[in-house]
Length: 578
Image: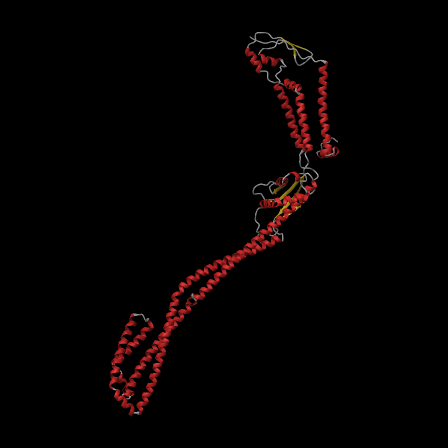
């Protein structure tokens, strides 16, 4: 069985064996197992730390000094802020609806864009001398960008102050940062004033624009309505005789005229009948006969038949119109009989002309009868002419009324179209007037500041503590980076240094174990150097600490004030033992 045995003799140093004796007979596998079984242990780490301490300390000191210098040389920046409450509408929306219905968060963003214009920011920069030194070397664009970077608007919502989507905005915080606290306060006040005035201006302008727009639209509809009314009026004036509202009146008038026409026709029939009788009597009187004695015998069969047909025509005219075939047939037969009767009368009149002339000159009674008959015939003729004229006028009127009645449906359709157009315009105009009244109420609501508004809860005050730089954070990050740089430098130097310092390193390199390991023997000079190093190790951090305290006292805040604040803080936490 193969084995390994060491005999170690300790020297004055406790770290390295003085002599190591190895029995021969070990194989290569044994070396490999030993190499794998000897990782970097704590003693080697401590040895590297002691050996490379200054490589660790120097970067830490340099980086720490840089961090401290940066933390205290950076100019402090003070922040002055104001909290503005977004107050909801005081009057219930059921009574008055505001015309500004956008989300407060959106409106705040819009107001910010209007306030943070180039003109406003440049005016504020010049008014309060915000960038005294930068104004000389930076362009206007760079100054505006820097100004916009220093202004912050944070929305406060109902969900724990986080600006989530859909959350209700209840307030917003407007802040400005500057190296001079008084300048920060003045600029913050100016920005808050601009925000509040811009909100009032925006809401009032929007309400007035809405009212003005509705007024313009209402005026346009009013003009259209006047045009529609004028079109209806002109159309009615043009077709005043064919209006549908007069249809019943025309129909009743047409009925009356038709009744009058029938009455006149009956009267004309009677007058013509009377004329025929008068002609017969006149003929008898002119013949020297007494018409009263044989008047009945004068009536011929033709005249009797004619009278019967005329009576039948009168009876049929009451029930039938003039265009009826029966009426037309009766009229034709009556015309034929009248012509036949006239021929008979003319023949008998020629035979008795001589006798009439003799009778008239000899019999005075017959002469008087002839005179009376002549008067009656003249009167009858005048009546017939008058009734025929009246009948012709009535028939013309009836035809005119019938023509108007036939045109009435066409006129009615056009009037319905015009009336529908007018009604639609009127309904739109009425609806727009109602909206105009609501818009006017909303404008009054905005002008009297009863709608949603911005109320300054907390005005900007002069800050006493800087918000930037955060020296504790800088110290923490800088300290971590300094230590990391020290450790990295030490490890880098250790990796670059290829010198062999231990027996295990030599054994690892040669794959052979050393026969003897002699420890390092310290001299008096080495002890002095070691003490010097320890002194430097203690002195440098002490000097750095004193330098940091002095910088804090001079550049940041007196140490007695800081000590008092720490004391009060510890006392609040009940961490003091007394």
